[in-house]
Amino acid sequence: MTTDSVGIDAIEIRTGKLELDLAETFAPAKDEDPGKYTKGLGLRSSSFPDVYEDIVTMGANAAHRLMERKGLTPADIGRIDVATESAFDNSKPVSTYIAGCLEQVFDEDFHHANKGERKFACISGTQSLDDAYNWIRAGRNRGRAALVIATDTALYARGDAGEATQGAGAVAMLIAEDPSIVELSPEQGIGSADETDFLKPNQQFPSVDGKRSMKVYLARMREAVEDFESVSGDTHPDDFEFIPFHTPFPGMVRKAGLLGYRHIIRGTEIEEELAEEIGHQPHPEESEDDEAYLDAVREYTDALKETDRYREWYSQVIEPTLGISRHVGNWYTGSVHIARAAALKYARENGIDLDGKQLLVGSYGSGAQAEVHAETVVPGWEAEIAQLNIDEQIMNRYDISYEEYEQIHDVHNHDEEADAEPLTAPEGEFVFDGWGRMGERKYTFVE
Ligand code: CAA
Image (cartoon, rainbow, N blue to C red):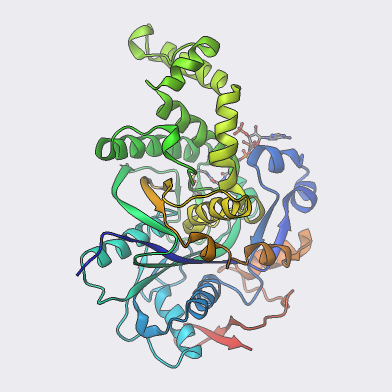
C-alpha cells in the first residue's frame, strides 16, 4: 500500500570545520573592499574542510547523526543516494564510501540498500530527492526510507573570480512516507537547456563564465516557474510562506527573488495596487522593438525593487532563507537544502506557525537546469528543526588566516602533493585516513 504523503522526515547539516572570514581576512589579502563580500555577494564567511575532512566524512558525519537521532539502523534504509559535483572517482560512488563508514559504527550492514551517485551540477541534490520520492511512491521501498546526502567541497582555482563564493559542507535528508517536516508536491516544473556556463571537464576546479552563469540561472529558473504553473496553476505571492532558492551566494538570490516577484504579481491585484506608484508591467506589443521592451522591463524592475510592498515581501519570504548561507558560502548540491532549513529554523525561532503552509523550492544546476516544486510543511516540523545544531557548528569553526587558507586549499587540490597539520581536533566523527592499495580513500571513526 503506497501513500501520497512522501517527503523529508529529517535533516542534518554538517559544515566544514574551518572558517574563512571574507571581509576581515580574504578581502584585505586580495586588496578588495569588504563591501563586495558583505553587501554585494551577501557573504560574511565561508566554510572549509580541515585536512581530515572531505565529501565522504562530511556526508557520513551528517548521516550518522541523523540515524542516531532518529533511532534508525541500516535495515531501515533501502536507498543511499549521494549528490555531489566534487567526486574523486569516476566509477565507485561516494555512497559506497559513506555506507562503509556507517557500517563501522552500526552492527548491521547496508547490503540490501540501493546506492548511487547523481550528477548534474548543483541540482543533483534535488534530483536525488526526486528519485527517492519516486521510489517510495512507486511502492518499491518495502516500508524503508531513503537517505539522500548532498555533499560538496566547492573550491575554485586560486585567483578565479569564483574563489569569493567557495564553501564546504553536507546535508543529509531522510525521505520517507508520512514525513515529519515537508511533503513534496507531485507537480514540478523544469527549465533545461544545453549551456556552457560552469563545467569541470575532467578537472577538479570549475571553468566558469561567472556573469553568464548568473544570466543562465535566471533564464532557466523563469522557464521552470512557467512550467510549474502550467501544471499547478498560476502562483501568487500569498501562496508561499518561504521561497528557498539555490544559493551560490545571497546576492544571486536577491536577483532571483526580484524577477520571481515581478513574474508572480503579473495580472494580480498587487500589480494593480502598485500601478499608481510605478505603472503597469510593460508588454512587448507596447514597445517598438525588443531592445525598447527590455529597457522598459529593466526600468519597471528597478522601480519595483524600491517599493515598500516588494521590500516587505522580500524580508519575509526570501531573506530568512539566507541565514545559513551567509556564513558558509556555496555548498553546490546542498545549497538549496540549507536555504530550506534556514527558513524553517527562522520560523521556529520567531514563533511562525507553518503547519499546512506551502514553500516553493527553486533548485538550479549549471549546464543547465532549474526545477521548481512546492512543499507542504507538516505538523512535527518544529521538533525536527529544533534538533539542528548548525549554529553551534558555525560558531565553533576555526578561523583561518590567509596563509592557512592557502595551505588548506593546496591540501585539497588533487594536483598538489601538499601536506599540513590539522587545525582542529577530531572527536566522535569519521576522518580521512590515507589511501589504500588500489588508490581508494580510507576512513576511520575517531572516538
Ligand atoms: N560594496 C557593495 N557592493 C559591491 C562592492 C562594494 N564595495 N563591490 C562590488 N559590489 C557588488 C557588485 O556590484 C556586484 O553586485 P551586482 O551583481 O548586483 O552588480 C557584486 O558585488 C559582485 O561584484 P563583482 O560582480 O565585481 O564580482 P566578481 O566579478 O568578482 O564576480 C561572480 C562575482 C561572477 C559571482 C563570481 O564570484 C563567480 O564567478 N562565482 C562563481 C559562479 C557563480 O556562483 N555563479 C552563480 C550562478 S551559477 C550557479 O548558481 C551554479 C553554482 O552554484 C556555481
